[in-house]
Structures are given as structure tokens and as C-alpha cells.
Length: 334
Image (cartoon, rainbow, N blue to C red; front, side, top):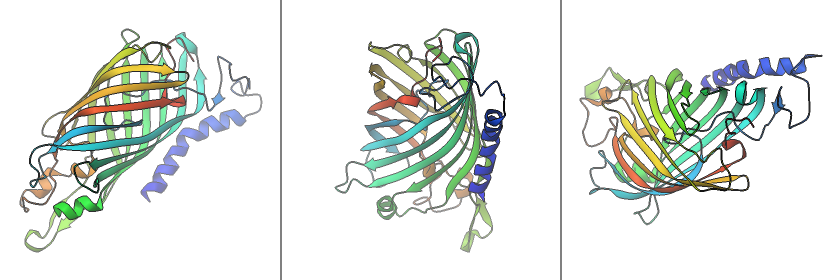
């Protein structure tokens, strides 16, 4: 039912645009010229706004190696070398408004992403866990102001080898949420943003039997707040190597402290492809969904097994490749 609800709600974004396009004589059904500066265009080659640099579950095509340490893996001594890959793509489906540098830009898109973490110090390279997301972002820009509203479904799953190794309990972790990001660019390379997620649906509550009969807990937070700052002069320039830097901070209704994510490096373009070489640092509640369970739900349980809002320190180096719709146009329009 939750997926059906997600699909139906997404139609609320798409149907008004489709109806406008189909209307005879509509001003939006004007030019089929892909270089037209105004009106509706299907599958434009760029987004209205760029993806967030440092948000840990932003849709991207990337991978890297990291030193990670979590406060739950009691058998581990210190940090371990892990690899995380992000297989994600955001495609702008329709440009509803294209006003250029001084006008209003609006697009509706589709996004899908998978994040998987692997333990590189085990012979089998154990899968620790995977997160999944599918969403429908509506993006808007007016001069130096930007916004993005995304309806998305997210779910998380632990790897079988990880479950066997640590004997942890496994629960359904899934939710449907509305994500809102509002941003301002005081100057073109600098972006300041804030926003968050609010659940519109989530996985089941769980009850504990035996000695803890009647105790219930949930597996996903109800809301997330985030804010951050970025410096990225390269996303609107071609042929040059430019530095970039971003910091993202998040808290939830369960979080005891802020989760801090910092990402920086250099970026350059090769034809239509943008390549980012980066270093990343995170400290705070883990970004992996199966490690973000309700800490109050486990107060009386065995300390050796349950997850309770796991903290993680995470540092390493990676590479991201941006192709086509992943790259936003410059502020002078697309």
C-alpha cells in the first residue's frame, strides 16, 4: 500500500504538466526546438539546480575507500577499511519553465539510487548493508534562490554475511517522505541551504515478547533537519580544474547530536562529463539506514546485539562521475 500511495502521489506532480502540454493551443506546447529558451522541454540535458555536495545520501555515481569505526561492533578493534559505492542517477524528465538567468526555472524529474558498503578487511569482502531510494524531485530556481521538493521511498537492508558475523537483529527499515531543500546563492560559487524530510509513511512498529512483552519501537525517524554550505566554482565552468568544498549537518527526532559530513576536493570536465576527486569525513549517527533505529526502543535489551542509533566515524577518498542531467546549468541559463 505504501508503494501504491507513493505512485499515486507522484502523479499529482506529473499530471498537471501533462495536461497543460496536451491542451490545444497551449502556450507551453510551443516550440519543438531543443534550443528554445522558453516553454516546456522533455528530457532536457541539465538540471535546474545542482545536487548537494556533502549530503551523505544524495543521488550520485561514485565510490571510494574509507576508514570507518562504529560504536556497535564490539568484536572489532578500532577502525576498518571499507568501500562504499553509490549507483545513482537523476534524470530531468520535463522542463516546465525555462526563464534563463533572470526568470523562473522549473523542472520535474526522476531519481534512483543504491548505496552499498563493503568490509574490505574480510577475505570475502562482506557486504555490510545497502540503502535504496527512488524519488520524484521538483526543482525550482529564480535568480539567486533555489528549491527542491522530492517525494521519495527509501529502504535499507543488512548484508547476510554481516548478520552472521555479529548476530544482530534485523528489522524492516523503510519509509516514504517529502524532502524540502531551500537554498540561496549570495555569490554564484557559494550556496547556503536548509531543509529536511518529513515522513508520510513508514515501516511497521515492532513488539518485544518474553520478559519485555508490550514494549514497542519504530525503525525510522519521523523527521530529519539538515543545513549546510558549499563552495563550488567549477560546476558552471568548463576546461579548468577547480576546488570544491561542502559541509552538511543533520539531526533527527532521535539524534543525540549533529551528524557532520564534510567533503572537498577538485573537479574538472572532460567534454560533457564532470569528474570529482574528493576526500570525505563524517562523524555522528551513521548514514546507513539499518543503523538508525530508535534508541529508546532498546533501553532494557541485551547490550551485545541491538542497534541503538549507531555512531560512526568515517574518513577516506573517492571519485564521483557526473553525466548529463547530474550537472546543473550555470546561472546564466541552460
